[in-house]
Length: 144
Image (cartoon, rainbow, N blue to C red; front, side, top):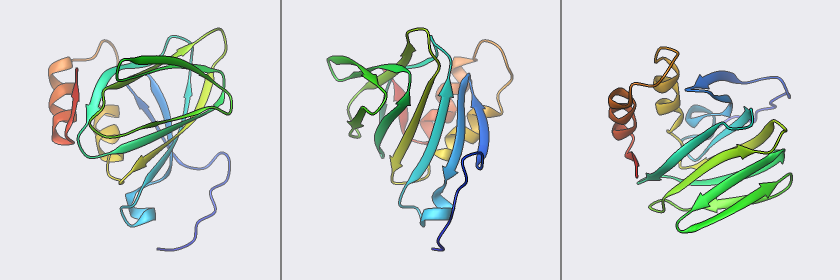
């Protein structure tokens, strides 16, 4: 691995079905250890309950408010709050309130950015859930 300096506006920008992401560090950068993604989203944007077979995630809210569901619990995170989502436990998130949210998503181990790349290539508009489910299934992620 090589040291990297990532400036504030640097990274690979993706729109993953409305989830605005900037991949700051990928599997290639970290020798497969982790992926780091900055998210910038409008109120109402969210991802439905899903389960990862292979990855643990840490969400760190930088600005705004994000409602997080993990297992049977639901909580609202504000700037500075974070949550650890271990693999195998259903979780979901949604930006709440009037303000846009900015969050840093850390994924351990790396590799899920490949799924986000594939999903970002789907046509705009209402998602074709059959295609979405097939792509996610290749990465051992399922919606519940």
